[in-house]
Image (cartoon, rainbow, N blue to C red; front, side, top):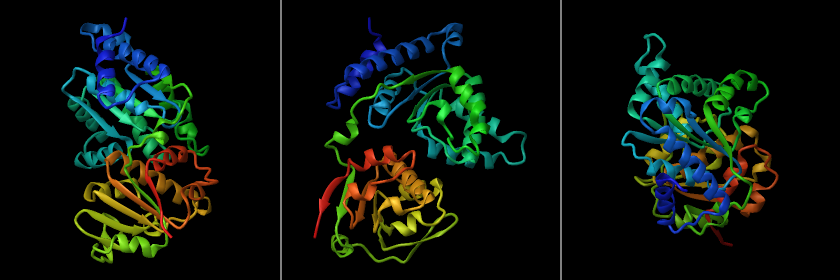
Length: 336
C-alpha cells in the first residue's frame, strides 16, 4: 500500500512529463514512508531517523526524488538549499554573532527555527574548513528536531576524501550514518545525459565566432568582487563574458561564483582548455562553478576550440562525473 505522500510526489514528477523507473519508484516509496512516519504527531518521531541521506551515481534522479518529496511534504516552514549557498549563508550569519558565545549554535537555532524540513542538495565537501563547519552544524540541527534531507554522490564515509583531512571528518560522517536513513540509488542510466532540456550552449569554434555572437555586449575591462577583480571580455545587466583563465586560474571561492550567479542570468565562459592539462585546483573551481550555475538556473555558454568529449577526456577529479553529466545537457554547436 503506497502512502499519500508517495502518491503526491509521483503526481508532481509526472506533471513534468517524467516517469520513474522501477528502482526510482521503490526508492521514492521508501523515502515517503520514512518522512510520513517522521511527521507523525507525538513522540513517535523520536524513534525515526532524523534525516534521509540519498547517495549514488550521477543522473539517477536523486535530486528529482527528494525535490518531489520535499514539495509534497505538508509543511509551510521548509527550505531547499545547495551546499555552497548554505556555507556562505552560515559564515555570514556567524559574523552577526561575532563576540558572542558559540556563534555556530546561534546560527543552528536560527536555521532550525526557520525550517522544520531542510533539504541540502548536492552535499559534498572537499575543503576541510567547510567540512568541519558543516559537520559541527549537523548535530545541533538534529538536536533541535530539524528534519534533514541530503542528496550526494558520496556515501557519508566517502565525504571529504582528501586523506590529509578525512580522519577529522570521520566523527561527522559517523553522525550521519547513525542518525540518518542512508540509502544508495541503484546503478542505472544517466537520465540527465539523455535529457533534451538544455540549460545553455556548448560552442566549439574560434573565439572570433563567439565574439560575433556577442557583438552587442559592451566591452568591460574589470568587475570587482568581494576580494578580487575579474578581468572581463564584456558585460551588461544580464550577461557576463569572461575567459576560463579569469574564472578558474586564480583562487576564487564558491562565494564568488554565487555572487556572479546572483547578479547575471547569462554567463559566457570562453577559451576553456583541455581539462586534463589543468591543475586539480582549476578543475575543482570549474566543478564548483558549474554546480552553482546549474543549481541557480543560470544560462551557461561554454566555449572552446575542443569538442566536448575531447575537452573532458582524461579528467580524474572525483566530482567531475557530475560536471560531465551536466555539460551533456548543453546544446552542442560546432562552427568553423
